[in-house]
Image (cartoon, rainbow, N blue to C red; front, top):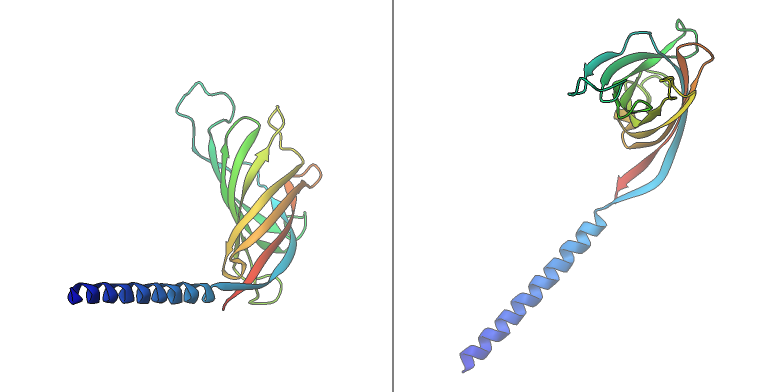
Length: 190
């Protein structure tokens, strides 16, 4: 009889210690979390030069009866310059994939790789912004003159970036003025 009672007491103490250890573990994990001090805000502008015929069709629809661009995918690489003049200072490269979901919309997934602009070796030096969104067209297949896409990440000094890109056609040329606005949360381990 005494043996059974002692067994119950020991089990109760083991369970209580296990709960205490679990609480310490949970408290430790909470304290080790990241603390975001403040978001750094950035803005930039460049001109994306669209060279005629530089898009390469990489895949198409299975059904040969498909009309227009729907289900076609293209890869591209364009130069980003300081001004509309294609011979102005090069700010980087814009490259990615366009996939037509209809004849009036395409999904854009691309990256902007910056040259070493701004402070030498600074945040933008050889860093990339990753972007995506829906590009829209008129019924006759022409680009709408204004577009807005999302910045969904980055690499190197632009890691964890999020924001927007606004594209505006530069006159009658094949160039687009691109204005970017994004944030990067500066976080530290607590």
